[in-house]
Length: 154
Image (cartoon, rainbow, N blue to C red; front, side, top):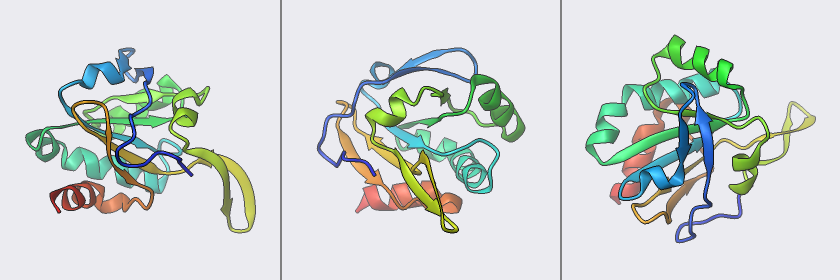
């Protein structure tokens, strides 16, 4: 699980999205960023989360948020996933897990008694100055946008 907490400086990242665009933390200076990490394209939970953020994308933009997803999938996988579900925001491919490890969301997981290494589904909300405002470790995939907005409006 991540060592990062609200108030910490967000680790710098740079990667390439599904359209071949280079995306970095610097691109979001002066904006709030929802940076979400997910295990794998086209799996039930990850699809539900991406679709929820897509369905609420205009609302998130109105509230001043940019959205970026990160997983260890390839550019090709991200491109197909984004096209299939009309995902309007960047999905960074991180097969080397550089960004994933910087944010502390890679580690030993357990599922049905089986242990394996993988991505902990985690979302970081980063403010206009690059500081972490909130960390979501228990993501509600089907209502993640609502979960984020409700927490930040308190």
